[in-house]
Image 1 (cartoon, rainbow, N blue to C red):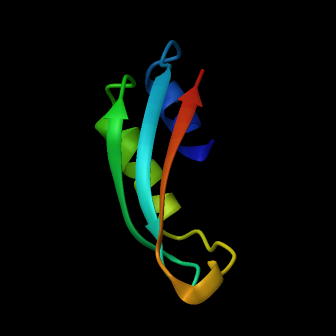
Image 2 (cartoon, rainbow, N blue to C red; image 1 turned 90 degrees about the vertical axis):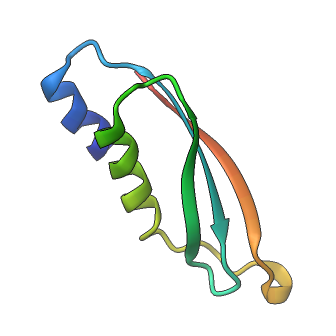
Length: 76
């Protein structure tokens, strides 16, 4: 939400979908994250989302294995 609200200050009509692929490591932290697809056309917001996502902590995956996730953020 923070990233999107920052973008809206520059463009009040900004909207779109940002699909992010990321890997949750065995310790629950995000190991890698990248934008897979985006209709937002705002690198600043996309980079902000990735930066924030990398600080998230998730429950520990069963067996301590890495888990790959693809998640769409719909911003409107």
